[in-house]
Length: 225
Image 1 (cartoon, rainbow, N blue to C red):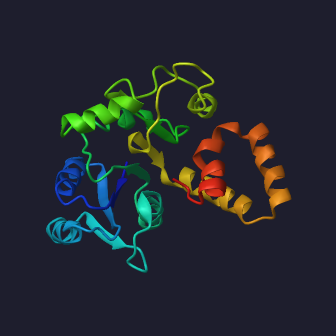
Image 2: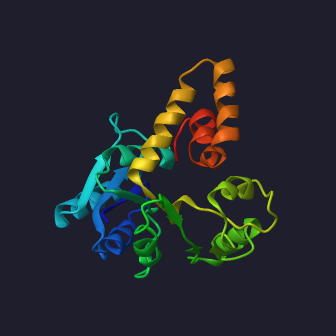
């Protein structure tokens, strides 16, 4: 099990070192991919130092060295990833030592393509804490109980009541499965509008659980993540 951890970096000079070191603690992590997104602080210099210090740390920027946002940065990281599995981490977050415990067992089953866990929020100030609780009711974000993959998308649309929250930072996914979804989504987005909706409706019926992880994002947000 070889995991590529992708970290988009923007104005994270205070936190990115902790994020990288938390990923490097795992033997399964074969590389940490930093995608620096034209930060306004000293994050780029810190990323360069981390890449020099750690063989597993790889640093990239967008071809125009511009700012393109977290989603585009994750997409670039996916293109560069060499691991069998991909995990995501924000530059101001960090992994706890037990982060991949469940995945070690889950991915022994070749039918399992992805797993997702829970996030815990820690607050740097009372202002941030109060802003957070205006949107969410708990410092933990997770899906409340075991669901079949087909139920994840309707759960995100609040069709299952207290479903919980799924976060991209809690996702570990087999790279081949992710690339297959990307190829299917690009096929749809590159076709004409009438045919596009026919193809989307087809997948709604035949492959419903794939919608959240590809079709919606690539067609309406112009990004896979």
